[in-house]
Image (tube, rainbow, N blue to C red):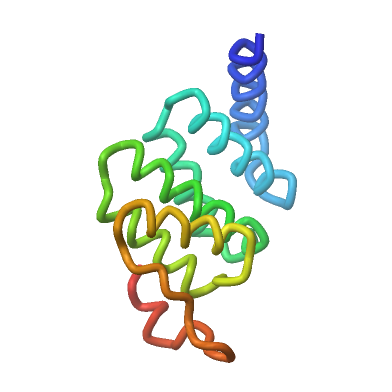
Length: 131
């Protein structure tokens, strides 16, 4: 079944991550470990994996999806304010990206404003000071 496959896949990604500590494949494995953890209901593990990925500038290609799933993990763990923070930052940084659009939907579902930045406006320097 799918659950058994997901558990086995997560174990393999975790084994890989213990053996290797850098590189593009490592970043991809962290993302997959986070996503599989989320799917298996291991929310705190998922949050930890996505936070690890977001702390790595060299993993910037994974940041929009990691931030979205970080928000979903926080939301599922009852940490709504932290989820809103993740979604809001994602909308501010990637409003027209797939995950930015999903974050806008989550904010609306949570009864929060989901206004993307005005056209031509990106993240301001002071925005980076939030983390």
